[in-house]
Image (cartoon, rainbow, N blue to C red; front, side, top):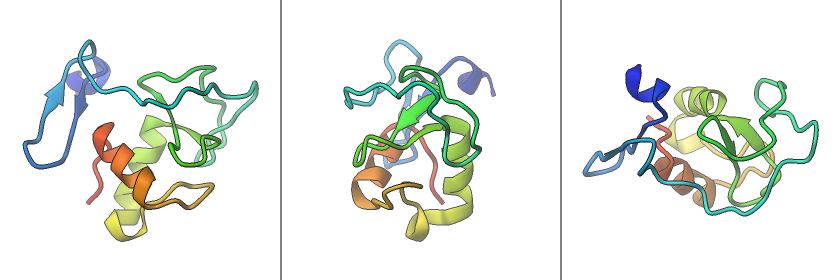
Length: 105
């Protein structure tokens, strides 16, 4: 729990790397959410910028979600069904989520 509270990222890929908040990977997508953008999973507003707690789909760049929400979806969906909640992209979305520390069983 202290790693999550500190903004650390653990990659659940071979080598199982962990990164502190200063050295963790960041999404390369150069977009910001529109005012009033909601997470498609919990329907609550997301932050007005990308952060540790707010992420975006790298494929459609329209789906903004909370890290905890997408982690919950990953745990429920599993590897075969984990995809962007809006555009349904599987390959680019899943690989980016792995890099960003989302655990997908």
